[in-house]
Length: 560
Image (cartoon, rainbow, N blue to C red; front, side):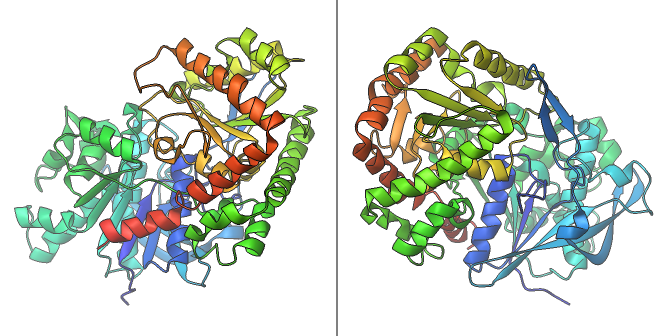
């Protein structure tokens, strides 16, 4: 039976539900928000990902702030339905059986998008093959490549097994799914009764494929030694596809996706520009990311929007009318959201945070270019401005990749500096950042801080979630903030002089200047002006930087 869905969305990670740990961070949450918005808009989509029985990982921090990883156990049967369909793939010459579990994402109008999570934990498989869908981004490059065979090749075969033969567009959310193009080429050859590729096969597959690249950071682009690729996938020379994927002597899945896609985009205007410099031989557009408004609006703000902007869930653009909501109502909703965050902070960290003190939120993947410790570049000045310009308290969160020791040391540095500043600037680092905690932090902070090293922030979406809840950003001009920033209207920029490359100390000095001379005096002394900035954050940024607008742009640019 053929199931009519025109778009198949493939992503290695998808944030489907706060209690389903099949996501690591922004990429997965963005994927989940995309599917939720597509369901609201009744876009004929089906999605494919991996099951990840052990999740990404459960993060604990020891007394020194060193990260400890544990499997993120969850009850698969409580959330997913075993659809009963199996397919097979070949890895290293072995037959590997793959089954699918189903999770339905239901939109505002009742439209359902099915998400199929692939699973190799079957008795017909070897012990090692049964673990292939256990850990998100786990294991070595051999494990990772085998996972990507399951996602890309296994994903297409599973869709065919389930009757999805009418798919017109295969959307690869990052290069992890690029091997789906190899399976589509195999289908194309088989349909023509040939064992070798022809130029017409390549063009036919390109017409079906869309690729979104998410990062300018080199480590984010999957590359594998060719000898490993030949061992895992088999010798590809016979069908000619190794030439499509090989780059600088490696199997490069980003280049495979670029070569085999009709439409390619970055995830912010600046990121599109950066990507065109990185991959100069390819035409790369940009569609700026967004967040799913109904998911990320905190309960106090959702209730306020329901009263004052009826229909905002179906029409996110109508959030521009937030400018007409009374100041005291905006402030009261924020105070409720802040109460929820501080209640969590004080319960979990025994921090004694005060509801009357400006609370800064910082939650990112803990890695060097995110610069979580930039705020501490001059701790004497930070201490001084907290005493003289206005009190501060700061909430940090974020996981380091298990193999990123530099990221783990960054968390430890924040721990050490928090102890050094105790009594002057209360600071906590909350473990196990996830969708639950993300909702609390982005809604409950008074100010959202972002300090990446330009141009490495492709987009960033946490600041969009904050804006939706009336929380302005203080951010380096990179990623989405270049588009969302209006100084003193939607928030503030760090180091906004002329875009020149700055020393770290100069960027930190700009951060301190904005806090000391502008933000803290406004928060404590000109509250009505601060609330006006909160309203503009919602009306200008919340109404635009959402996945409803983003999916409509994909429908217009990529899926036509």
